[in-house]
Structure formats: structure tokens, C-alpha cells
Image 1 (tube, one colour):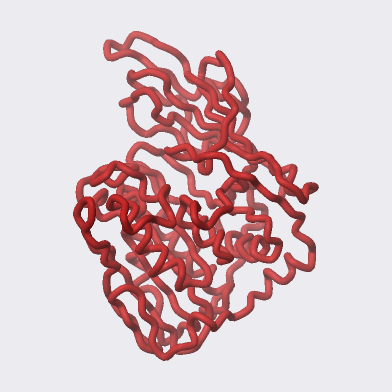
Image 2 (cartoon, rainbow, N blue to C red):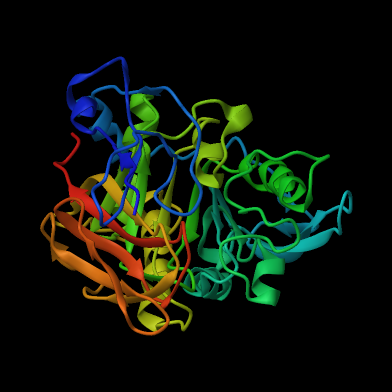
Length: 406
């Protein structure tokens, strides 16, 4: 198995004001060599190079993040429209974001707008970029009725299912229409394939109209995942302080520090990063795993969104942050270099030391091929949930614990 080292280099966040290198290491059981590269996320598709700038978050900026300003610029009108949904003050509206036909078929993305009785921030919550990450989709669906617009200050935009083709055809990771991940092609292209056009519509109708954004994900069909959030470091002190406070308010107790996202808003790749590069404090949260929806996973996402809304003064709700969140400053991804049958030896959330056995691979006649070893000491953020294994599949992600990046 091949090894690609993925570094968040978060020590640089504490001391550096200039560019710092950050990427992702892909690690395999057989330590035969290292290829150093960059990637923008710990999941399925590698990203290209990006220059990363870090700045120290001062006490004044962090304190300001605990006193969120009520932003009314986007929300000051008596009605609020996203796609075909137009809601009046204190009301809810249902509609769609129309993805027009082009090189391939068009389709409709469902959307709900809750326009609060009082002005306030505009928060967008999206899920279903990967249509078989079911817990996050169910969570946003539940938020539709869990929030009363008559009790709301500001506007809530809910997009429960971006990747409708994936959901309908039960295809993990990608849009089966064009075989592209629907969280890798933002801000989109109106002249591209279906994923490009859908990303363009979501950018125009959702990202451009919100003040803050939360992108919900979870373990896909082959991922036994423990819940965690991503906090993206942009280098903008004020924005980073606000998004840090949001991710703490959400309440998940493991937070991955993501410092390697592209900085160019014209090539932002990810939904959350598309908002971040446009100056809108945002983050990603993940819960759920391997197909069946555990009600606890959906509930933790619903509660997390409501906590952030309380923090932003959109709801009258306390949002206590986790007392001692675990900050993950580096992700090491173990990738398969052959086909076979995978037999896990650890569960999600296990703490492993470097060299510990994560699992093993056999051929189709149960003859041993190799043991899968932990490339670094850390936490199993997710481990492969399915026996089937082909070259390039992710076997596990190991999170290396860091310090609080204050």
C-alpha cells in the first residue's frame, strides 16, 4: 500500500503570519516509501496545490467571536427568495433550485426558506452532496419542521439533498450522471456537466444569499465514521474567529483543523470553502455511517445546527461549547494498493499507536495478503465498513491530535 503524507501543520497557525505548507498524507500498511503531496480534504478525491496563509487569532478577535453581530444586509426585506421558494416574514416556503439541462439532463434540488419574523443573519444549511450519507440528509429534513419562523430572527435556508441522482440510484461518493463528486467542483460552471451546473446554481442561489453556511456530511456507505467537524482556517482573523466560535457552538467534541483549502474564490472546490472564500464564516460537520440511520446521529446534527442558531442570536437558545474538544491537526489516510477482502481489527474512534494493526486483507480464498498498520499514532476517524476492496479505496483515516489553536 502506498503512503502519501497529509499535513495540517497546525503548529504554524500559532506562530506564523506567512504561508505555511499543509496537505494530506496517504499512508499504506507497507512502508515502502513516501510521496509528499497536498489535498484539500481527507476523503475521496485529492485536491491540487494551494498556498496557505496563517495568522495568530488574538484575544480581542476571539472575544469578538463570542459577541456575534446581527447581520441584516441580506435579510432586510419583507420577503426572501431562494430558487422558486419565496417566504414572507414569519413564514416558510418550499421550492426548488432548477439545474437546467445542458450536456446532460437537468434536475431540481429541493430547498426550503424560513424567513424569520425579525431581521437577523442568513444561515444556509446544506446536505446530500453525497446522496448516500443519509443521516445528514434526514437531519436537514427534520430541521424543516423543527424551526418555527415565527420565533426566528433572520433567515434559514435549508437544502436537504443536493445530489438527487446519487440518492435515487444509491450510488456513493459521486453523481452517477457524470461520475463527479458533488463537493469538488465549486463554484461551478453553467456550461459544464450536471455536477458543474448544479454547483453553479447552489453558489448563486445559496452561497451568494447567505451570511453563514454549514455543510453537513457523514459516513458514506463504506465508511464507519465517528462524528467530527472541520474548522477551516482562512487567514482572515475576524472570519476565522467567528467560524471557530460557530464550530464550537455546534458541539461536536472532535474538530479537524483544515488549513489547506484553496484560497481562490473562482476555484474553491468545496461548498463550505466557496462560502469561506467569499468572506462568509462557515464550517463542515459530519455524523452518521455506513447506510442505516442511527437516530442519535441525525439528532446530533439537528441539535448542532440549532446550537449555532442560538449562538448567532437567531433563536433564543443557549449553546454550550464542548468543555475540552479534541483538536485534530493532521489526518493520515490509509489507502489500498490492491483488491481483496478487508477485515477490520479496530472500530471507529479507537486510539491506536503507530504500527498497530488496523485490519488485514485476504484474497477471495481467505489467503492472507497483508496486515494494515497504523501509519501514525492517533484516533480512527473512520474505518472501512465494507469487506470489498479495490486499489485506491480508503481503508481508514487516522487523526493526529493537536493542541487548541488559540
